[in-house]
Image (cartoon, rainbow, N blue to C red; front, side, top):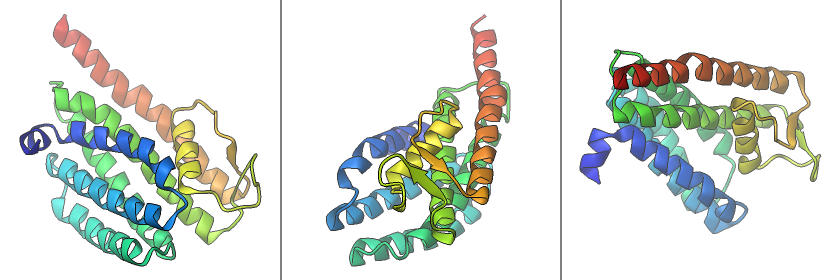
Length: 216
């Protein structure tokens, strides 16, 4: 497993993120669940830093962002409180955006498509989706009532609701019942829509084209 993580960190990161998406609904909303949520967050952060290490990006910057975020998540796991969640979310959002940028640069660095770069397509997509979800957490904390939903419209939106909003926005499927209603929240959602279209148009199409050319 360690050899696989060193050789194909993007594959491990992608698999861990998909597993976390399936696990989070079962642990959200309870004290023990919040602790597990924090522990999972720390594990994902470690994989993000490992993925950045495999690229030409600045490793010290990833560590600089990851260490305080990990400390805040540890405090949340011990105390069972969500008071620090917006602060850790802000750090994680910046780290995830930086890691996504590092993986994009890694995928565009040459004209050879490796298996890890193919996994990086999915890992980068999920990194951006999570980064925007954490951004929505910060937006909601700064401006309560920024998002509403069909169920319990006046309540603060949960992490899974914001992550669902992020995935549906980034993929342009538009299936989310969570919608932004404040101007700044709508502005951030529009930026994510643009990011999703640009990612598919430029990054995915380029790598798929290179793969077809290589096979030809």
